[in-house]
Length: 450
Image (cartoon, rainbow, N blue to C red; front, side, top):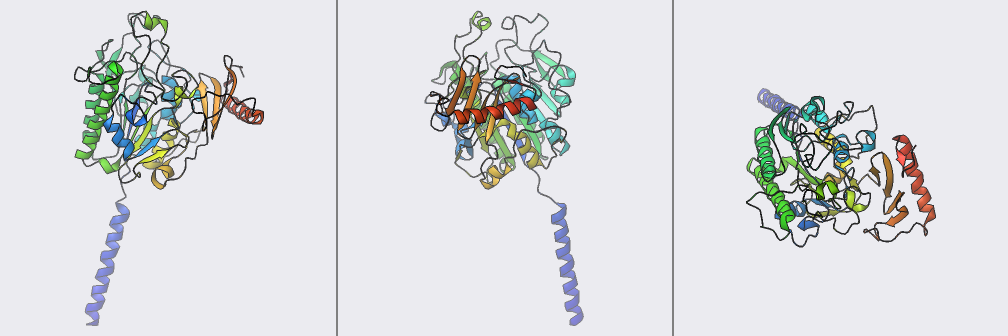
């Protein structure tokens, strides 16, 4: 009996040891990541951000079952710099402060390590569907910058004649697949959103058995706004409202696909915009019969795209990850698109580059453990000029046109009341921080060259 008992004990220990080995050798798969980046969508364009006319039930669901951010800042208030900051985690004054176009001979510097590079190194399938805008020559295209697959436009959908009079007849706008132009795109772009949505769903299905990173960068609602015939005249918000409601429908299709493929709880979905809405259109567009004003809304905020007021870079942002992110959260902490880079890298177990500064902050603790944002300040850049800084509730903005402006964004989010003369010590304190940052990035300070 003793021998039998001993044999049973040895067998039991052996089995338990085997089970432990299986657990150690079978690590939990890192999450899939889907980043939906809109173009020129304003803070007030969505129903869940207070729009009284445009209906966005699918984005409402994401906000209701995830986190809605109310102080989320795009890296810049202009297209290329915002995307450079997003994909590198670095303020765009460091790498791509100005827009690229069909006439450009450069792009995002090749020394920059994109989030696609980091995630690909971590075993992710990486794809971009939509707008790139970080260089159109072969060595700058997405497939040379960490992405396995590219389907979309190399730059903005308005970079065509006659809207960009400096272009030539040879500078035509083509839809690309990987490195190859496959179809010319003109001013009528009504199927583009649905086309991108279909390609995104195909990418998800193709890579459902491995971790994937999908960067879905819609061309809309950047001008020229175009909605598919199925959605024309279906909203109360005119053509612009039709576009936003089309986008919301595509988000619903994406979420439905994740659920059908059993990926819903394995996938972090982030929805945000590259900058605020485009107001005050250039004369080159007005001359071509484009509506005199863009109907995107910055909500309660002052300013719009291409400004360093809040309406330029404070944008809608929602993060959705069932059974990981607690439902129905509204977060007012300062967050930036810069922060997605280190956050995604941490979730993937990837390594950040260590040969230059990363300005983004890791948000994993905020997403999983309800920590506050590690970010307490944000710099507002206009090209290579540092025009403003926000630190907690205070924002200092200094420009040649508007002079010195100090706003308390808790009390006055619309930036109506300049408090600079009341709080000279706060002005001096924040000005020092702007100067230090400008010196470290070889930038100008409120229009004064360094």
